[in-house]
Length: 443
Image: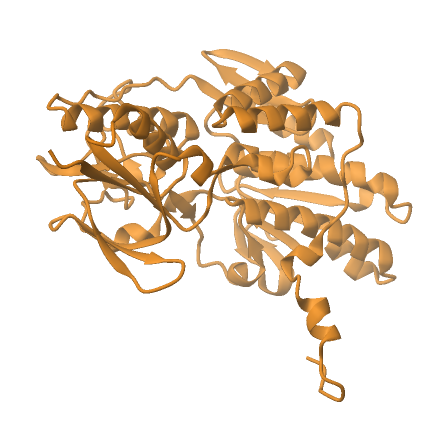
């Protein structure tokens, strides 16, 4: 028989884990696994705050796809359209013309993007925190603002440079804020021109609590710990404008800030708008507990989805509840989906995905954290150790586990690197200036 083609759209948590498991379970005679993603790596997003803070090397928070998926066929490009009625996907490679790829099964897992609001100035002034590029940029930008503040005699410029605003009190926002403050506090030892009380960290959260994934007392503990570090926590407050770096909040306050980090939630990838798959009111693909795509009562044969972009019923809760968009669900859904696709190819019935959320862990900087796992609550050092242990165990590949542990071990003996490499963001600037023809106007 001809091998089935399994097309994997996106190589995030779901795509990578599903492709890896399928390539191990199915022989080349049974199936060909093809993975399409514009990036050559999968980003392990829980490590972005640590990469931004310099606790681990940025390269160690990503997993090279071609090394991990050696039994899969890789296509460097973007899926721009899926017509499941024809079982055809249109792929735009990173170079060359677009082409159509037929498939027998498709795993739709493009993930999510930042969920933004039409706030004046946000498009021009904001920076997200979902990619390794954004994490590196934020690190360099924060350290660059310290340099600006130390060099300027203008108190207004200094105040704006030393004001860092984070919008969104979920895990991404809290961990990014806490790790960046930790890094800046270390860096200030080398800036005799600056004082700690000049640096202002502001968290803006539209609801009345942070870390909604854990109990309220754990969220309250987190706020207390951040306030002890002199952070300005604004709950039940919305960002209304940030035109030209002037932050205006719903509580009437207004101040200048050179740094505005947006971590206020995610939404399914807009790539799904170019597919013919059914969607729910939150624009997620509707799925059965088996991870098969379903349109009303009709199962779409050969269509599968999971992760942030999929509405997967949570069988551990009352009907009408769906699995949260977390890495914890994504990696387990990927494994179940790969097993179900294998079962269908071999003529067996798929099995429902069912997993009770075991809890959450969050880092609040070096040696600080909160954790709620299997109903057990921890804070401080034990929670921080659990956070690191859990994520070290979850990042794919032995290679990455070792490199991360080495980074952490070295940090116990060596001081944190606090140098900005801002030239990475425009590496040709110096060469372009040096290579200008004599007499040509400077650009």
